[in-house]
Image 1 (cartoon, rainbow, N blue to C red):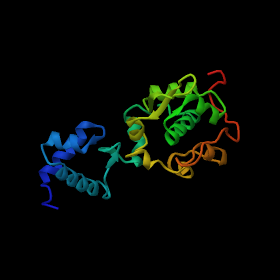
Image 2: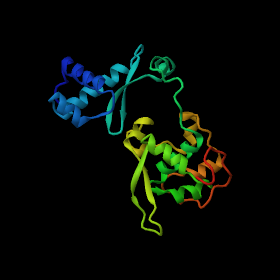
Image 3: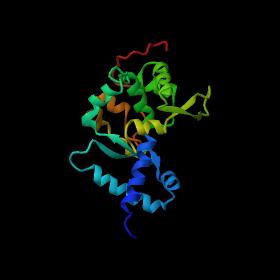
Image 4: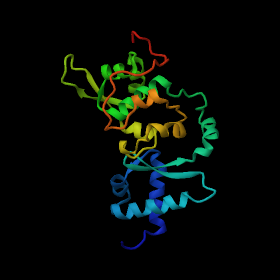
Length: 212
């Protein structure tokens, strides 16, 4: 496995993560530090163990194929207060539902989303595009050639995922994000191998109008 990195090397990688303020790939860290990727990976593992200890205000987070330093969720309220984010708008249930369908079924078209939800989701799609949580992925070769939508790297970072394969099961959403998933919603957000449903089993109340 080779020698462990020196304290100076670990400190350098830590400094790079802090200065970046966002997820950085192993290759980019190695390039900036002028170190071998394997040495940087070992340094990251040391930092992970370091921040897992008691009394730490930060942790090392592996997201979107990279690593970043983030504050612990225990301190979310005071951090948001410090940064003036207390009134920051969160995703509505309609947008979250639309995002979930895209995440689990991507790539998917707006008509397919509308068929599943039973309502026009144009407003939610615009919101998700504006927040850069989704993007277009070409057009589907059907009548009208509608746009296909998929999630982005920003989506992975926002939800703390390293890859879309790490998406939680629908039944875990309540514990993770406070989203109540009932039987009808579980049909909307199946695991990838589940055949698509043609229509939802109940009507959802949300801010989207039926006319978009």
